[in-house]
Picture (cartoon, rainbow, N blue to C red):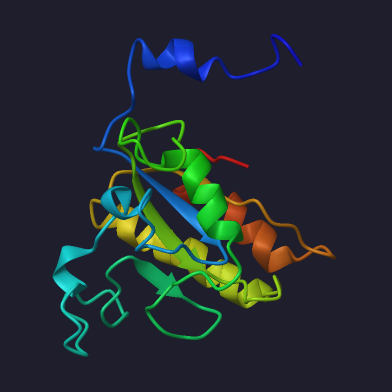
Length: 175
């Protein structure tokens, strides 16, 4: 619909974004090797060494790009493509003659996978993702928003409490 877009092209005349901010994508993971996303993936440098040790002491071993609560490991590789698609909208590298461009060409994208290949996950796993985001924010990662493009089939008080947590309020949210 004409006039109903977000005016991204006009905005890019002013700025193409900032690599000083992080958006956490809580979804099916992200293909962090994707040609349009690899350069914009957030990296927890202390744990990007695959040494089997929790080098930064955050409770997760080798959580280089984020975590995977669905499979209980630190490899949030997308096996559904939804999280990768969402990450591309947020921050696919711009002006590189490849694929697509995200709204923010330079953002850093953290991933937390809580949904499996079929698109289902648990409340406990998404709450753990929210807790991970809060932990990393408290450790100085400049997380400015989370993207949560998923739904639940029923009400959960624990999910409500995790989302309503004042610590998460500091982030702002993208829905």
